[in-house]
Image (cartoon, rainbow, N blue to C red; front, side, top):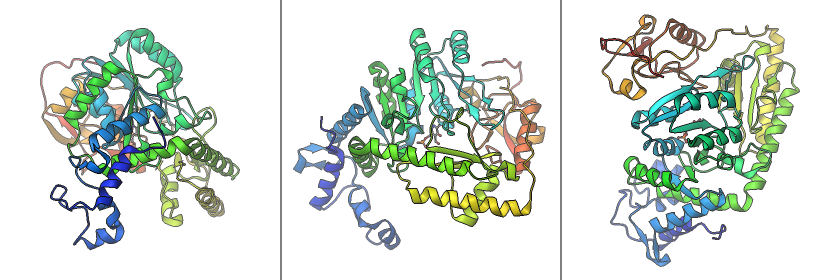
Length: 482
Ligand SMILES: Cc1ncc(COP(=O)(O)O)c(C=O)c1O
């Protein structure tokens, strides 16, 4: 196969060039027409390459489906997979396709993205969790240790294990060892590589999931590799499971996927085949530079090497100067016109990717330097170290899926102790749910949630008036499930 070709991109742009008179969907008829603001900002180009997927491109003697199949094969070849699917509902969609066919226990770290949870609401499988543990200095969720995974695999004998690689903060498990464990026990290993698509292109980055024995991985190509938002790729090395994944895709995916989105994935794959190593190598170097320069500033701490496996994620803190990460994010946005990826109580995460330049890194460093000097004038003390522990996994009376479908009512958070949750309650970021549907509100969870609201930490799932969703009283005994 020729990696210099982009069959889907070429088919679509050829169709646009033909200027076909469209009596087919979509209704915009391949031009913004009367929609003047769209015309001005998006321009006619995007509309011209946005026909429906039923359209053939006779000049190229193939239709789009065939071109898509070839584009996906080329991607599989580049990422050294047996099969690839292009995805238009992000890694969320890919995780849903992977997990929908499960029927047994699916084990995953509690800090996993909500897409893994929502997949387990859809699937007949049963969710089981590796409890979240946090680095005590940085309070970021740590990937599970190999021993912990081994023990859980032995106890629960799951059908599948889902590992996030890397975490949002760029930390990783020893995935090779985890891959071996899964293989020895015949457990499917799926890797949420939403933030790790670039791993394939640099030996300085952690090994990608497929190289560690994963049956399948899902990557948000849009997050680290430059495709359009919501476009991802699923790569598989397991033919048996892939057939199920394709069925799941037919059930869950729109019947009108955006052709420009798919074409951009194809063209990005071509570019990555040509210059991926160079582009990712530059991003790694820029990340290292930014980190080094920030570390030189008095009062700025950067995430230590022991926690940082991916240098393109610059995690830093101004807590010595009395600022929470949440405040730093706001100041960078308001005073310096810089938007970071996320912030939490201690730290801020600035994401570096193939789209960055030395100038963008310098802008960030300059802004932080300026902020540090302004702050030093005020002579503020260090931020109080917070010692509140993240709550333990609560007992569950219903499975996640049962809890999701049960009748619910809003109740005040303060009065929730002892009630079963009807929804997720998740401090974001980093997005580790305190509680999921079917679990029991403990006093520890309620206290922690109230503390989050006090310090302004956004709590997803909290309803107006500080209410939470609770399951309507179901009577009978609580049976505890994992
Ligand atoms: C770890 C992780 N997994 C999955 C997802 C979902 O990815 P997408 O936005 O591509 O659907 C995200 C998004 O932030 C994520 O951080």
